[in-house]
Amino acid sequence: MITSESQVIVRYAETDMMGFVYHGNYFAWFEIGRTDLFKSLGISYKELEKQGYRLPVLEVSAKYLRPAFYDDTLTIITTLCDKPVLRFNLKYEIKRGDELITTGTSTHAFIDATGHPVRPPSWAVERLVKAFEI
Amino acid sequence: MITSESQVIVRYAETDMMGFVYHGNYFAWFEIGRTDLFKSLGISYKELEKQGYRLPVLEVSAKYLRPAFYDDTLTIITTLCDKPVLRFNLKYEIKRGDELITTGTSTHAFIDATGHPVRPPSWAVERLVKAFEI
Amino acid sequence: MITSESQVIVRYAETDMMGFVYHGNYFAWFEIGRTDLFKSLGISYKELEKQGYRLPVLEVSAKYLRPAFYDDTLTIITTLCDKPVLRFNLKYEIKRGDELITTGTSTHAFIDATGHPVRPPSWAVERLVKAFEI
Amino acid sequence: MITSESQVIVRYAETDMMGFVYHGNYFAWFEIGRTDLFKSLGISYKELEKQGYRLPVLEVSAKYLRPAFYDDTLTIITTLCDKPVLRFNLKYEIKRGDELITTGTSTHAFIDATGHPVRPPSWAVERLVKAFEI
Image: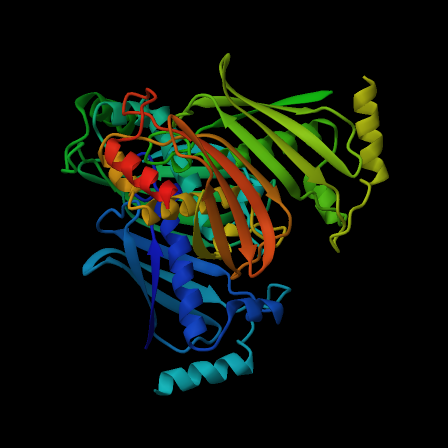
C-alpha cells in the first residue's frame, strides 16, 4: 500500500450556485492526487506519455460527505493498494483538516498509443516494486 | 421507471490532451440528463431551488467503455428507477448512435435551505406519482 | 461579413457561487459559435484538424453586461468580419431573447502540425470566398 | 502599484486535444492571482463576500504568446495599478521560468448583495491605501 498527500486551495471557478464545490470538479483533484503519488515514486506521468503510454480512466466513483467551500485548504490522500499490472485501482480521501469530506475511487489501464492494453514500462515497474517492498 | 433522452454535441473545451473527452466532464452531461428528465415531468429544478429546495449530489459513479470525441453527437439516456422520497437514484447511459460509450449513476437527497433532509414538495410528488402510474 | 447563430441552455456546472455563470465559461460558448459558423459554410473544424491544420486562439476578450442564469436559453451570434488569411478575427454577442448580455472577440491563426503559420487549405478558402460573395 | 505572485502546476484537466492548456482555463488562474494579491494585503475575498460585497468581473482579455503544457509550473504575476474605487483594473502575466506565455487584464466593480455599485468597506480601503503608500 502506497500513500501520498497533496494540497489544493478551492478556486472560485470550482464552486457552483449551490454555494460550494461542484461535484464534477473533484475528479480533477483526484488526478492531482495520483500525479503526485506517481511523482513520489519517481514516475512522471508526463514522461510516461512521452514514451507512448496512456493511463485512461476506466471507472470512477465519489461519495460526498460534506461540502467543500471556496478558499478551503484541502488535503488529497491518494492510496495505491496493489502493484499496477494491466489495470489498477486508486482510492482517494479529501479532508479539510481532520474532517473527511469526500471519498473516491478510480480504475485505470495502461495502454499504448494505438489503444491496446500493455504492461507498464520496466523502469516504472522497478520503482513500483521497490516502493511496495519498503 | 421513467426515462428521458437529451442530446449534446461534444465541445472542444471538453476534450483533454489524450484526444478525447476528459472523464470528469461527463458529470455535467449526467446533470443535463436529470434536468431534462424532471422537465419532462413538469418539474423545473430551477423552480425547486426558488422554492428553497436543493438536490445535492451524494454519490456518483461512471464507467467509460469507449472514448467520446470532439463534435460527436451523443444521446444521454436518464432513468429514474423509483419514486424519489428522501433519497433517490438515477442511472445514465451515454450513446453515440447505437454504441454505448459510458454508463453512470447518481444519488441525490432533497434538502431545504438550511441543509436538512426534507420530502419533495407536494406539487412535485403529484407529478412524480402520476408519471409512475402511466 | 458572415454571421451564424447557435443556442445553449445554461448548465448548472457553468454557474459559480455568485449565483450566475462563471465568466471564464463564456469562452466555451464562443467556441460553439465559431464551430457552427464554420459548419454553416461547409467547413468542419474537426476535418481541418484531421488534415493537419490547427486554429489556436491568439487573443480573446469579453464584456459582461448582464449575468446569465442556470437554465437560461441563450443565443450566440458569431460574426466573421473579413476573409481569414493567416490571422482572422471573430466577434460574439450572447443574447437572452432581445437582451444583450455579453460581447466578445477572438483572434486566431492557421498553423500546421509543426506550429508554423500557414494559409487555410484551398477547399476551405473557396467556401469562404463564396460565402463572402453572397 | 501592487504586485503579487502565485504558482500553479498545470492540471491534466486543463489541457485540450490541441495538447496544451485550453485558452478559457487561464481565467481561473487570473482569479487565483487576484485572490492572492488581496490576501497579501490582508483582504480576504471570502470575508468580503460574507460581509455582503461582490466583485463581479466586468471585462477580461488575454493574449496567448506561447502554449502552457501539462505539469508545467507557472507563475502568475498580478498587478493592481490604481487604488480600487467603484471600479478597478488588474493586469496579469503568466510565466514559465523567465518565459512570458500569457498576458491578461480584468476589470471589476464592487457591488452589494442587491447588485448596486458600492465603495469597498472602510477596513479594506485602509489596507489598500496603506499598501499604496509603501
